[in-house]
Length: 306
Image 1 (spheres, rainbow, N blue to C red):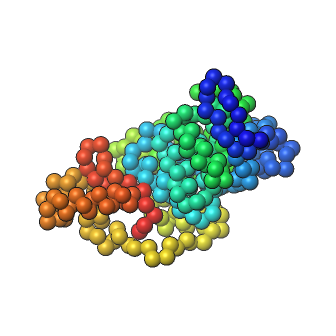
Image 2 (tube, one colour; image 1 turned 30 degrees about the vertical axis):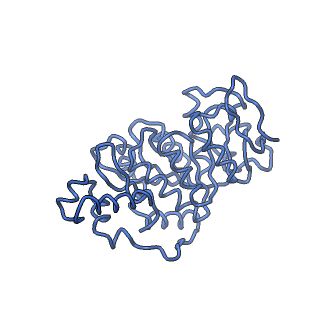
Image 3 (cartoon, helix red, strand yellow; image 1 turned 90 degrees about the horizontal axis):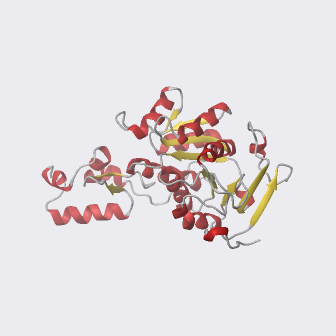
């Protein structure tokens, strides 16, 4: 069944629609075993996408570092054939879904409200791209049920429940992201976390999880190793990948410490402002760096290239 007009003028996602009871053979087995399992799932997209994958969650008001890490690690997971599961929120969740799409992989969104009341509304186009790419938008709520604040914490148990492991990219304390990690821990599942600066409120939750025993994901290799242990995947090599971060002193410096253009010139990383501008613009286009709101350039962790 294809999309239909929504009540109240809400955008409605187009694609196959399914209502899965817990007795349905397509109902994911992983969700039958969680505390308070859903009685029904409303799905827009491919039910085959509802496989055990990796949950990636993080702050809505994410920093460039958090958004970049989410997209980077989702790209890697999807390239290895691991489904990326998240909640479709702004910030880290959205970037995780986009990273999976970048690699041509599947990704699943669990909504707080019904699938015909997609939230946040500004992500409707992203949700449609996910459905079109073979992923799924899922909710235990009726199609047109509006999202209410308490529903999102309830939704988090489904994200953690379908996943074999949860990666916390960026999280404050307390936060909805932290509650997803709690759900995963309560289910005896692996929790991974990306460390951040001890001065950053958005990394306080991830850092605390690491202190409590979560596996720290410090680079691509540790993440790929974790995926290999959890899913039995093999390392994915891109032919002809250039080790730009290691070979270019300018890029290596920005990966280590964000700086403004005038600081880079003073440090001798370019002969003149024009040459520096060309180099920075090129790295921004490739997603290797981001320009921060304060004018500094630094790592967005937005590329798989090493």
